[in-house]
Length: 164
Image (cartoon, rainbow, N blue to C red; front, side):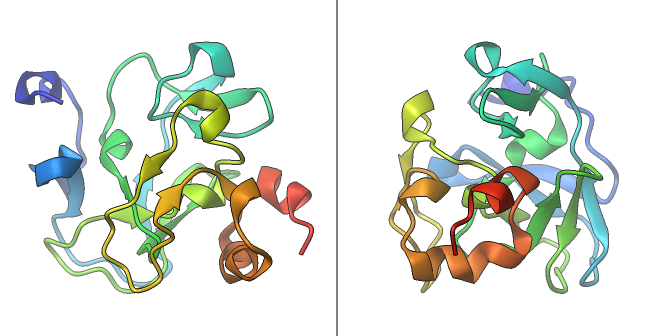
């Protein structure tokens, strides 16, 4: 992503977008957040999968929450050991633990995405976590143990699909 694409992105004072090497850009904390605190609102409206962007968040088998412009939360990168989870029903990213000022805001994409391969959105993970899954393809591809590890923070869609 080019820097000029950041123009016009509205970012709350509590957050900022910074260059992040091979990731492009990242959303980072501009202040400390406490565990359980709201970090960033999920903007957008439900759209059909065939018109959604790669930054969209899956809410059903055929719909995603998306916007037609870049928003701050589009810069929340994936981590296999995230510091936020997405409460889709309330549309907020919530701190899973205390987050320090300057720390990258992350969430586990596989807590909302069923099958990223089908949409061509799968990727090699570079989160650096000791629990890194390597290839991020979708919740449906996880082992039983991997599913159990993230079960408490799953979206309603994935809770319904969860056979563990």
